[in-house]
Length: 132
Image (cartoon, rainbow, N blue to C red; front, side, top):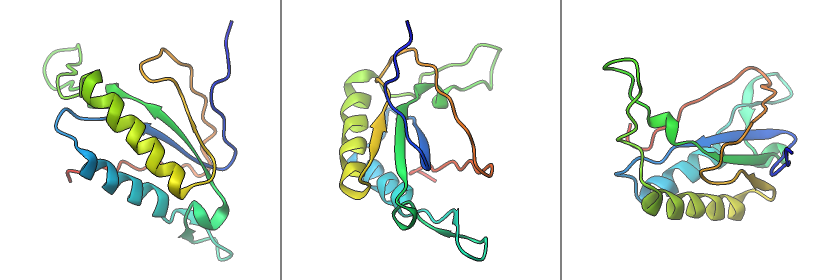
């Protein structure tokens, strides 16, 4: 039986991948970028509004497979993804810091096999990497 864990209306679906070398400083950078990113349309149909401007929401899903390296062979290597002892505290820190900025923040279940649905308005998909 499927159970609905998190759901938002207008806002961002954040697929959060945590690298083995990430720190709280990386998370702080990502929180600031995600919560202040101006990609929602204003009255002139220009990407100029942030989550706060539109009373947007966040759905945050942990996603270690973002660090899948497919360069060699046909089976991805996930060696760059942080192990749970590093990833879980940083994921929880990211969520708690986002909640200080955005009134509605939903999450999935860390490490669970989930089915995630997305209705992409735009479509706009942006990769934010704290190291680049």
